[in-house]
Image 1 (tube, rainbow, N blue to C red):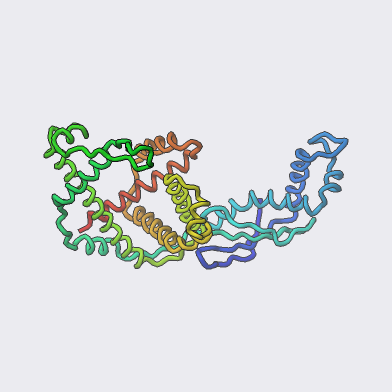
Image 2 (image 1 turned 60 degrees about the vertical axis):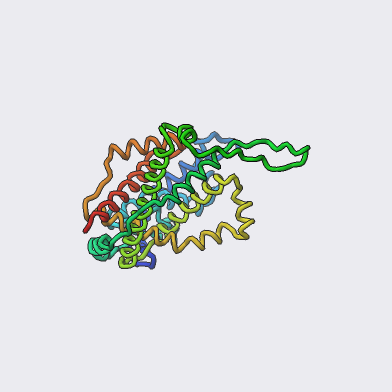
Length: 347
């Protein structure tokens, strides 16, 4: 299939528009294919599918409809060739429109393609080293925090005693257990209350440490994002918005609510929420581009065996999940973690 590039224009938001044409001879070949395709699916009284004469099909559908079908079939073959030959780093499917088509003449068409944007990174190693050099506060868990955690566990474990109030409706009364060695043993493999408190202290310290690490990573990411120069394609922003939308749906379902009821309570539409989320979605998309580039620059990759294993678990838990998409998702998450680990270690 041959084509001619008429014009190539760079558009905002990392898009490119290509005006091109296909020869009348090529279009004629696809016209024959279009007539054959229509004949296999058309229903016309007095004829069997696949055995309808071409002139009857042309009479029924009209020459222009057949040419449009031929043009669409031709473009399906031409677009991949253009993307490969013109070395276009495409994101998603391009928008295609036929601008001129007539029997015996070349067909002209336009492609609008989102492309991988150029990205100018700041000195991310210097940024990470500076942030990592900031002295961190010593993390401690106070006795008061442990006692509060114990009290919360106590309340959660308390059996509810039905009220005996002569038929008057009242809330069940929690029978709070005494916090002692026996209580500790009832919660698991703890020999006494001291050991339980030590475990709570350990868990709370680990949680504080994780939050401190996430805070430091966020500070590094924010500085790199602020210093990076790029123009985020709309397709990437919409992709992040779709992820945020799916997470929103999941969170609402976990609360036992219906999305529409919750939106009514908020007095907002789904479009309102997506508009509010857009700045954050753009920042997320920008960060992912940055993490991808750092991974490339530093030759950081996820372990393929670990990716396959984790993707397998994901597919097993989500019926209908696309295996290839699951692998891409897991590989991205694992690679992101490795990039952050790399940044964590820069001194």
